[in-house]
Each structure stands twice: as C-alpha cells, then as structure tokens.
Amino acid sequence: MEPNSSPQPQNSSPQPLNSSPRVPSTVHDIPHQNLDDRIQRDTALLHANHSGGHSDIFIGRLENDDETTTKVAIKVLRVDNKPELIEKITQRLRRETVVWVDLDHLNILKFFGLTFDYNRFGCPALISPYCDEGTIDDHLKKTPININTRLSIISNQLRLCIGNILMHEGRPLLCDFGRSKILTWRGFTTKPVATIRYQAPEIFDDKPENVRKPIDVYAFAMTSYRIWTDVEPFADLSDVSVIIAVTTTGARPQYPTLNVLPGTDLVWGLFEDCWRTEAAERLTVNAVVERLAEINE
Image (cartoon, rainbow, N blue to C red; front, side, top):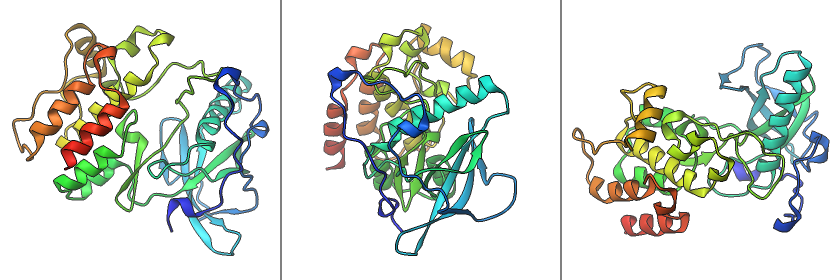
C-alpha cells in the first residue's frame, strides 16, 4: 500500500505569516488524527524493532476505516520518569507534530496521527507508514544502484542528513522533523542539530540568524555526495576535526579518484555550487531544481 493511501490527518488551515503563530503548549491543541484503539503492535516484545538517537520504533498495524490494515511505524520518544525530562521530550514531540502534520508531498513520509495507547509517561506515539527498505544508507549498502537511480534519489531529496531519509519502493522519503524549524513560527528555540559532517559552517557560529535555507542547500550537497560516491563526507576525520577543517580551512569532499561514475563531472559542479562557504553564494533551491533538470536531460 502506498504511504499516502491511509487516513488523512485533520490539518488546520495555514496561518498567515504575519500572525507569527506559536507552537501550542499541549499536544491536544495541535490538530491531528487520534489513532487510539486503532494500532496493534506486531509483537509483544519489549524491545524496539529499531532505535534512533531520541526514539524507539516498533512495527505495528493500523486498522483502516475499510477494515483493511496498513503496516506502520510506531515512534515512541525515549524518556525517563523525570519531570524536567518529560517536559523536554514533550516539547520535542509538539515541535515535530506541528511541523509534520501539515506536510504533504510525494517525498515526505506521511504522518498518520498520534496514539496514547503506546505512550511513555504521557508522551504519545507518532504513527507513520513503515518503510521496509530502511534508510538510504541501508538501501545503498544492499542494493546495486545505477546512475539514473542515483540521480533520481538526489533529485528528490533536500534535507539535513542521510539518516533522515527512508526508502519506500525505491522512492526517498524525508522523515524525523523533531529538530526542524518553521522560520515564521515562535517557539522553535532549539538550534539545528544534525550529523556534524553534513552541517554548513555557519551553523557552528551558533547564531540564530544563520538558520536559513542555505544551510539546507549545503546539507543537500553533502547528502548527494554520499549518495553518488558511497563515501561518507570526511570519512577519515572525527567530528571535531570536521568542524575545524570546515570552518577554518574551508575543507570540502575531494573529487573521487576510485570507482568514478560516468556523469561525475556534471554533478560535481552542482555540489560545489551548493556547498560554497558563503551562504549567499550558494544556489537557491529553485536553481538546484533547474540544474538537476539539465543534468537529467
């Protein structure tokens, strides 16, 4: 079943940009599909099927209105029974729900809703389609991918790091919006967090005004480099060394010398124009789309 074929969340209408809306103070104030009593875990085991930095993922089934079921991921944020930690994790859940609930795109993982049936200390679970192919990283490791498929994947992703992209039937889907930020909303106080080697140099200045679209264009280039070459950016450096190299010497991934794919010359120019040091000199998202269309011709 396609990810977009399941129950639709009850979204609110987009608010005017000049109203400067704020992240709601409770989960119940965020319009969403309540999926209580409609989710069944596939196993009674206590251990998660998958675990990430901030959450555990369990596999389950969503009961649809037509009596069919959909395989889903039950995302439970990791939290201990400490009031201050519960509040912090609940805030993260509210941010993720606010961002995710109104997103509707072929390459964004669908948000089905929330359920308190599998809550941890009052933090409900987030429900989305389960992607059997795993992350792009998993996909690249186990599936031979030709040049056209690599270009297709690159053309359909503009996000922070390769671990935030799942694969479903060969299509990349962006996921994990807990650290995303809506620039026109108040309440997103957390600075951007992603894999160090995918972050633009200005992020390390820790200035809120640097959180703009050019950081995503930079991350797109680093992620695309990983997809195209099968090599992690700065694979031979530690995270601390990456920060020093990127911010002080302008280091960037080097043109590959082994197993160079046909077409590398074309995409390499795009990468370089996206990971420029000065944010203002990087391509805009629209320009990236145009360049990819030219490369795909």
